Image 1 (cartoon, rainbow, N blue to C red):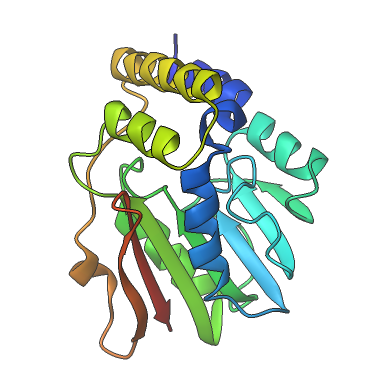
Image 2: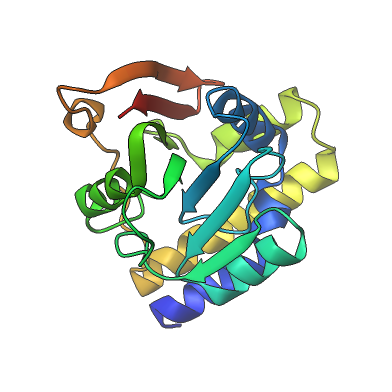
Length: 209
């Protein structure tokens, strides 16, 4: 399977895996940091789970059309743009907030994604970055799901799909897994609004830029 085929397959099962208590908890923490109006750009939006219910106009950017189609169909984003996270094609300073959620550890050039996110921010905008804590594995996620009330069969099915996707990503070399250095993402003029770990699984860094 080519790398493009990997992402297409991932899109078909993405919600089954990630529409979960963990994603819901992370989304609540992210939404609490966002303005209630204006434009939010979600770079690498996937199927829009993180943007769901934001309460502002959301522009989703993703390189996989199937992900965007689902995000639009489910009403999680208002506008979809088929583009790379590091080259969205959106105008400068167009957003009051930019989300980069669970993208950096997949991307071969995370610095370019952060630079693009900063380009899109108006002065004083909120930039939110999330990524998994180092060493997190599928067994950890299964335990978190079960402890926090996910149905047993749903949790195990998501676990099996995560494992399958992990194998496919290794075969196709579609995914580069490397946790970013949070200190390298902060500029001198940034105001750090949040820098911590959500649910023991997800690092969350929020900046006013």
